[in-house]
Image 1 (cartoon, helix red, strand yellow):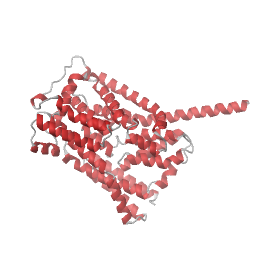
Image 2 (image 1 turned 120 degrees about the vertical axis):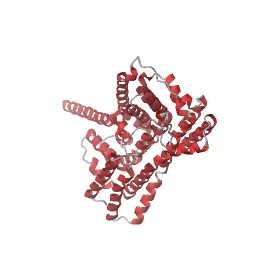
Image 3 (image 1 turned 30 degrees about the vertical axis):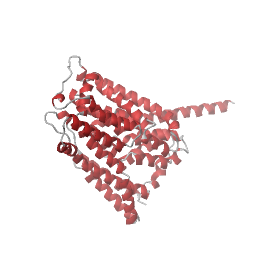
Length: 454
């Protein structure tokens, strides 16, 4: 067992390494190596054999296969859609059909609705977010607020949709069902959506693009692309595959293949040009708003994912954090206090583990026996959904946040201040628990008075 001092040093080194790498603009994988090295050192010192450690690392890395697949396919689908003309066509049509006056607000609404239907954040952000961020660039709308609205919208579904794997994992981890946890999650969901809508509506009203005298900008996409409704095929395939619950990686592969076929036919893209675009990204000096990254720029993130998988494997297989669980919640005197402790624990796990699934599973499974001694387990679902689940999109080195930032091409730290849905939920869930405490106290006080009067 890792001693408390060693655990504190390991956590501090992990955080310091990641923060140092982030602010020095070097690959996060190098910073993460510091924390991983300290975890391996203390785990061996605690008596874990090298063979057990090796199996833990291997198991953890293997669990990241799906994330690696998606990240690599995201790095391919964006230049594929651009080179084929799909993104230029979507931007061109969007500028004609959508009133830009409330683009930020509409982006949040569109993403929220589609993500509730599809139950996926990355799929929705790819199909809806990419063209909307392109429209924002053409309209010269500040991209960080627009990106914040897009990410907020897709996480409405990622957190709340019954089709979301994260939502179903939450129910499983807290020993409840989707049907039972839904009513407890609704108050904070509705409040966070209203906060988001209010902010984005005011932001749109105050924006220069809202002025009546502003004329719609024109693009010169038609000079470089053959624009046709056929270019919608890759998007339709991606959305359709998600609707029919096809695995995300297969949905991306089908859409990329469709882009290559349609782009070769309509744009006469050569084999060499396809290789260059997919490997290095789309770069044309005349169209700076369409510049994208390719697979080459994703390799350092793949290394980070592998290291994070190794880290998670060690934490999970060796049970490093389990002995400290009871100390977190055991003395919580009220639901609001328990909410604060549970939320902080889930967020810290998100900071360390670099994934969304591990904080949900560990917080739910390990704190459930302690939580339900005092409070209903459905409220634990609410607390985890409003903290550990959504924190994944706000931590710059978390794999889900990396995917979101990669898809829309906006740095995570730039969009987080504008992702109102994400950071309002932890505040709202603490307020909700505090109100529940007040109601319970009032009810207990009232029942005691009735007993005394009788």
